[in-house]
Length: 177
Ligand SMILES: [Fe+2]
Ligand SMILES: [Fe+2]
Image (cartoon, rainbow, N blue to C red; front, side, top):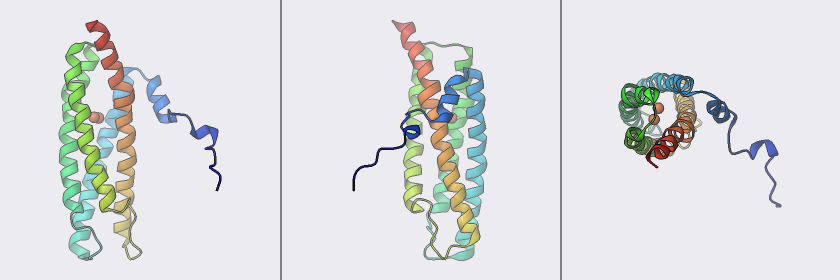
């Protein structure tokens, strides 16, 4: 089969949401990011609770027994990561640029990798958020919630790693030169 060229509107490397993020100043961009932080904690807490209910109610062999624990661990890890950004890094960025921001930005980026590893495990555990045919309505709702979290998280990380953090590091390196 001949290789089909992707439609031109899909070839852009910058998604519309990323382009929108680039148009925001630091303060507005951080406000957008904080909306994602709140949504993540809300969605992950709801998903963990739902997973615990399903695990205890169904006791189905097909339900991934590690899922409730994975979701709780991810919620704890993300809560700590986001608190470090909200209480330290973001206020420091809003005070001004400088080389002092390079180390915290690098720490936050490596923490993103840890959460992304967890997310990959979640994708494998849920078979790409695909419930089996016998799944109950709450099981399906749980996977929909996990999928939403996955998409939101990837967007949020792009806002930080492709827009906010490069602004900080580029200006900080320029200040060192
Ligand atoms: Fe964040
Ligand atoms: Fe982050």
